[in-house]
Image (cartoon, rainbow, N blue to C red; front, side, top):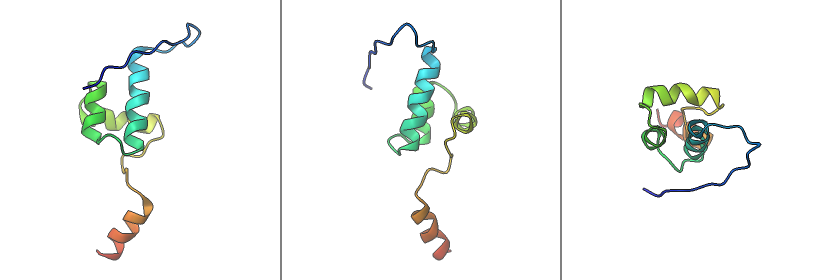
Length: 75
């Protein structure tokens, strides 16, 4: 696993865990991390991480609409 060190301005009042959640949810939303990987990054069980996704307006159903249309057509 990679380690990242960031220098943030003092005026940014954000806890490390919240920043980690923001990063994990964005990477999950972009398809760069699986649900399990994102949950592991934050250090939470998948079920708890799924609950957090809604707070950040990220859908747990993380696949393109075109893929859904194909699935419906093939059902």
